[in-house]
Amino acid sequence: AQNKTIQRLTGLPPSAHYGASKLHDLATETGQDGQKNNAGNACLTPLISFLLHHLLENKPCIVDHANAQRTQLLDLTRLQWSETLTKLFAVPVQALPACVPVLSSSPGGHGLLAGTTMPVRAISGDQNAALYGTGDLQPDCALVNIGSGAFVMRLLPQYTASEKLLTSIACSSQQQVQYLREGTINGAGSALDWLAKKHPDNAIPTHLPAWLQTIEHPPVFINAVGGLGSPWWRSDITPCFIRAGDHRPVEEATVAGQAVAVVESIVFLVMENLAMMQREHAIQRLRISGGLSQLDGLCQRLADLSGLPVERVEQAEATARGIAWLASGSSKAWPASFKLFSPADNSGLNKRYQVLITELKKRTA
Image 1 (spheres, rainbow, N blue to C red):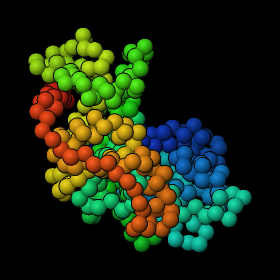
Image 2 (image 1 turned 90 degrees about the vertical axis):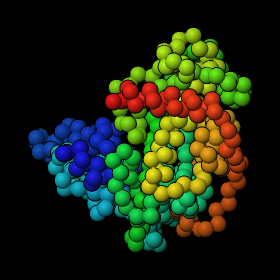
Image 3 (image 1 turned 60 degrees about the vertical axis):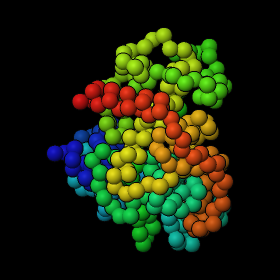
């Protein structure tokens, strides 16, 4: 019952990844839980609040709605700290920073950068800002942002809850709030790092683009690096390679085959999240950004498997562009160049995708 309450109020599944359990530990250590004599002396905040306190002239103790949600203590619809959750995690609400919108329309913004006359007009999280890397995202488009992890995001016409995917805050102002649906893949660039540590003598990043063009029959990778993200939310699955033909473990695959399998696994996990989003509202095209989006072979496989055109943002740094767009007043004109990947038939890729999904169903049952 508690788990459902947490997800209903915050849009997030219960997880130690978010800030509530960490803030609970801080409250205990600093006496904010009332157990020590120095109770009430500390302000308990996420990192963004600490940074703003030291960067802004007026030294505020604030947090924007997007980052506040990631503490798992924010009521997603009221946009204030939840009394239910702060009591559940034993984090006193009076020790938390004040919640403010992502956007500030006041002349001084959220505050002036110390020693300057420059106002800070927008504060947000990295993935939340990345959603706006090419300006205002259209309702029929989903963004896939791939770095150390991969994130699949699309704007929602209105707030609705989801049991398997995240519901987050894309942007907020004094007048309105825009919600988004989000899928999370923990093992993207970090999965390639995991493989590189196993084969330190192979320059995987250097060879990977060519391998993606030439390796036709890679194994299938059970990508649980960092734990399975949405829609499974499991931390007890072990990463491994299996054969596409009989699903048996494979140890003799080449480094090239393993590297291609890791990249394909990222695409497969993205597809599972897209499939869940498609059941809510139709998606007609995909936009992809982030460091790993520079792999043509990854983008083409995503187009082939989804059957949708994939637009790669040529300016890979989506977060910086997104927060700049928000801070500039959300101008409709925000030029960006794209490379288009059109879907093609790829029966082998589809087969390996089905192998992975079948195997994950068994392992998460």
